[in-house]
Image (cartoon, rainbow, N blue to C red; front, side, top):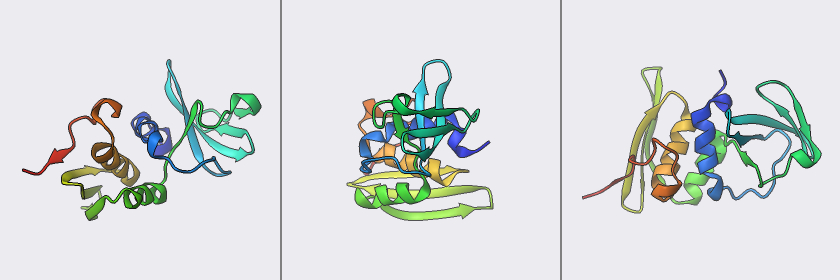
Amino acid sequence: MSLHCQINFLAQCEALRPLDQQAEFEVGDIVARGFADIGAEPYAVIGHQRLISLLDGRIVEGEAFTEGKHFYRVFNTRQLIAMCRRNEIEIQQLFFENDREWRLDARYSGDAFSGHDKFLESLLARCLIALLLPAGEKPFGLRTERRGEG
């Protein structure tokens, strides 16, 4: 299954919504919308106020697609690295270990993050959440990854 369809990654992207500085969604962007019953559903932007569901191929358009109100960006690697740089997160190590998973060590303002994941995008999102978001804005399961230096 695609990373864009994984509920944990969609929750990470939703948590990063306050850090998204791009004003509009563009054709080709992946966006998602949260639903109480299924969690979140990813879509590809295929035109002005026009989306296609990545789960079932259903087309959503017009008033049903309101940018910034219900939909949020599903970030790609380039966007996540740019977000790290813009927020002055220092990536100390980033490498693919044993052809299995990504490892990342990063610092921000005296705090450190160290983690691993099989998806680079998910690892970068976790780093941003851990280092930049207040505890109350972090998705469940990502509230203890920030470590201060002592």
